[in-house]
Amino acid sequence: MHVHVSVTALGITAALLALPACSTDTTGAKTSSAAQTGKPADAVQEPAALSSAALESRLLDQSDLGSGYLRKPERPAQHDDVTVIGCPALSELGGDAATGGTLAFPHKAKADFTYGGSSSEISEELYSDRAQKLSDGIGRIFDAMTGCPTYQVVAGETSIGIASQRLRAPHGLGDKQWSQLLTFSAGGRSSVVKQTAIRDGSLLLIVSGSPALVDRHLGKALAKATATS
Image 1 (cartoon, one colour):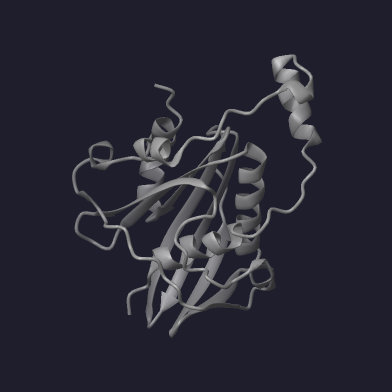
Image 2 (cartoon, helix red, strand yellow):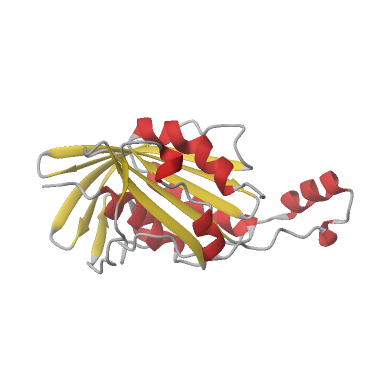
C-alpha cells in the first residue's frame, strides 16, 4: 500500500486551519513594529495580501529546481471522512475533512513535484493573509501535530500511523519559522516527510517532502516567494 503523504501531512493542516483562529494578544507585535518604524502602533499598516495569481507566479518551477523534477498534476479533492485517534489536540481542532490538500486561506497557490522518477517528492505551498493570522493558524497546527509523538489517522478505509517530531526551525529565514518530521506507516511500508513553514510578512511558505529535497530547496523557495521584482 502506498502511503499518500500529500493526503495526510498537508491534508490534516488543511482541516485545522479551516477553523477560526484562536484569539491572541498582538499588542507586543504592534509595539515591536512601531518601534522599528518610529510610528504609533495604530499607524503601522501591514502589506496587502497577495492574490492567488501573484502567489502562483512566485512558486518554484522545473527550471528553478533543476533536472530530474517533474510537476505532478493537481489531484482531485478528497472527501473521505477522517478520524484522528490517539491525539486529543488534533481531535479537538477537527479531524473531519482532513484530506483537503490546501490550507483555508483565501489567497493560495501550490505545486507538487517528483524527483528522479523515484518516490521522492517535494511540495510547495504559498498563502497570503494578515501576518498575525498566518502565524496563529500555522502555529496551532504545528503545536497540535508535534504535541503527540504518535497517533493514527483513518481516512475512509485507510489507516495510517503517524509519528511526529518537532525540529529546530531554520533561524534567519523570514519572520517566524516552524519545522517538523513526520513518519507515516501503512500496509507495512513507511515514508518520512519533513515539513517546514516560514512566515515572511503577509506571506506563508510551506515546503514539504523528502527531507533532503526540503533542505536543498527551502532557501531558493523563500527567495523567489519574497522577491519584490
